[in-house]
Image 1: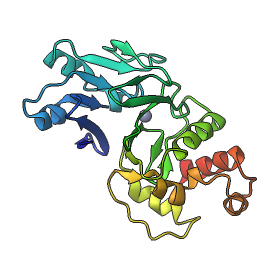
Image 2: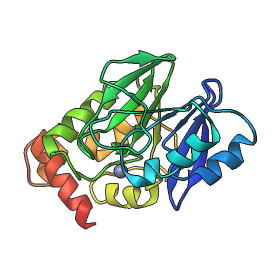
Image 3: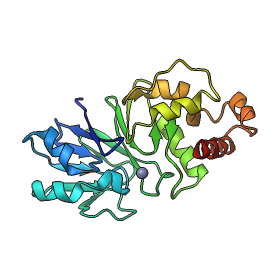
Length: 224
Ligand SMILES: [Zn+2]
């Protein structure tokens, strides 16, 4: 599938799926309209309600009459027209509810090999726990980690450089801080937040494998 990453704001990405006429997470309309260059849109899919993911929705809706604006509906998004629930399928995409960063967080999974994860997961990292708790996020990340290894993950932000520096405090890796996407297989190997069941990592953060290690890692990263 053709995925066009559109840099927005400082380190955000919107993603345009030209075959579907869909844009995911337009934090601002200007860069999206520039990149579309006259192509039309039928829908906007929002991974979650944060302003730096939905800030361009209203302007895009004014440019494309009838635009469907889709999100979980568990938190308010201005201009929302359709709600998505865990397990819904459309256009070859399956919706995954992945709460933790926010309560309304969604991932958009295409079994043909793509997943759009918003702020739930980043290259070598994960989102902060603004609304959910550690157990929620641990469970959500486990669902993403269980996707096929070849699946390409597209993140809501590029935090790769700082996440790599944090990773290297606990894991030896020769991974580079590249822009999205990254395969789920690479994340499972090098993303500490997907490795919380590793006894060696748990011991390094003074914890026990599982959600307690996730919570310890998240606290460390918050202070990094
Ligand atoms: Zn966010």
